Image (tube, rainbow, N blue to C red; front, side, top):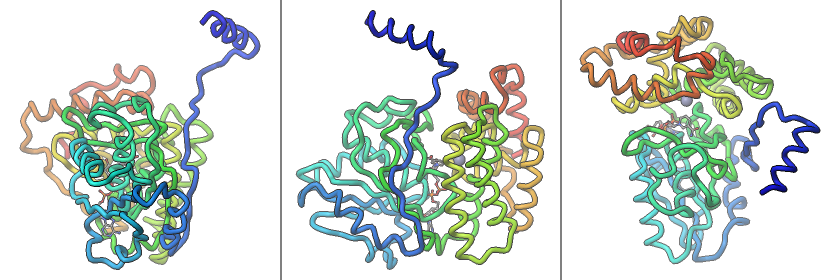
Length: 376
Ligand code: NAD
Ligand code: ZN
């Protein structure tokens, strides 16, 4: 112990560390291109542990009976498990999947592959972690609570915007909170970016998940945590979002560009943070189960005092894409319900700090938050 202290002291004398810079993991392998999904068989072949250790595919049930299912490279005991993405993933859902997989197979799987949007990708990340870590997944909601590496896991987005394909978190609704399992082991080992898989996403879902990316960019680029790393990714992602939502791209260009916007937006917040729209949107989703992309939009439209240029752009995007946001969502809520949303939102300290700086608490009161929720 003494030696360690001595070494640290010496090092600090030589080159005093200004701050502990983050050393965060990135997705080590990614394939991009139309039709690249068909390379999955070759990619997985190298990762198969034995004939008794299957690949588990967690697939959005929107693809049941679609031709995509026939293209999944099933071998030996591999299994496709369909899951519904109409609700955000829950800790109990993760725990049930893990128990079932352990029950059904002699050996741990060789890998878990999530095929779908943020919901399926987050489920795959969480299941891969929990196959190797004991207890309930709710125990690991928070920062760096996972101690054993996950099993090999692959993310294959079929709708773009959340950045879940690059992030080091898996956002879960738990018994007491909506919070991610944030850890170095959460990050995918492999991502397959095939823009063709985005074909068939309905217009509103395309829009709201895409706007998650737009809002990531605005919150990252206007945050106090901004640095050259996050700025470079954020600027590129914002430029791509503008092309997709304000330009006149062909459908296939729009798919490829939104996929890359999502990736860059995710990289941008990885080294900074999101902000006020996300803090409040967590409150809305927690209480009312409103989906992440829509919840962000519902809040963001009223944040002109905080992100004036972003909100101006957002309004332009809404009108160009002929999207009307639902209204009156909060009109019948009780004081108790408002307080729950306010409480959940105020717990998101890093998000507020990124948005408003260290003294954020002297700028934000429950009344200010209530006034924003009242408008939704
Ligand atoms: P999603 O996975 O929830 O799917 C949205 C809808 O689109 C679903 O109805 C789904 O069935 C449908 N869909 C998906 N692909 C389709 C396709 N190709 N064709 C037709 N329909 C399709 O969408 P999302 O917005 O990507 O994910 C939201 C989730 O992601 C939330 O649970 C949120 O908490 C989470 N999230 C995670 C992170 C992270 O870093 N881990 C970041 C942001 C959000
Ligand atoms: Zn988001």
